[in-house]
Image (tube, rainbow, N blue to C red; front, side, top):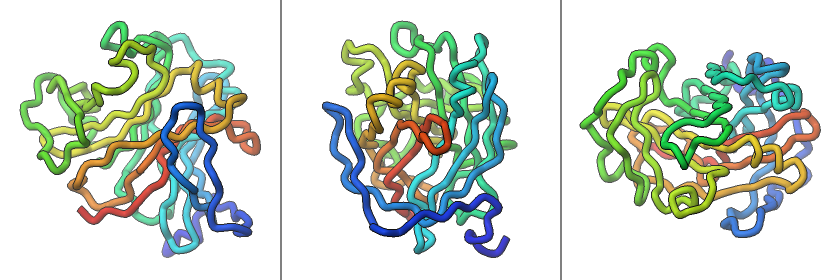
Length: 260
């Protein structure tokens, strides 16, 4: 398709205002106003439990990519499987280049390592900057090639172990789950062979279900000086409930263009 305006799934919103406030839960860092999308493009739905997961991208009138994430339907949340489920989720067709190639949504009913930290039922949402074929070639084991200092988010550390078909995970040791608090949501970066390849919001089922009543939660993302790949990168990530689509939302938000 020659233009993002010709995307199959486009929904136009009223541009009565250029910005709206984002509600924050107590203790979260204020992010500021978020632009209203001129269009929302929807990806193809993928079955999860008794419902679906699909991607979406909010586009500005000036061709800017404002936000992208996944919609987890009410039916999916109500009928999640008891076994670990990993889904490939395609981005909407015809959108402008964002730097991201595809998404994966992992439902972990029993959590995962490390024990005592991430062993609660939760979702991992990976935003990959590489294609699926390249991701599937990622091997497990020690990965001695680390990110260059300018590509490293401030304060993040890694154990240097690559997960198969994922890569190396970089965590922020100042996050609440490493400071004695129970894990409920966090943000992780991923790399392989010295290149950043994914961004990953993680959120527990309990916390995500809670935003239906508590309202949207927006949290700041620590950004590196450079990313290594041109694209649109978040200043925040968000969890909320979209009543109009009857779905829970996990998204990277406040996207800003970076050419390096």
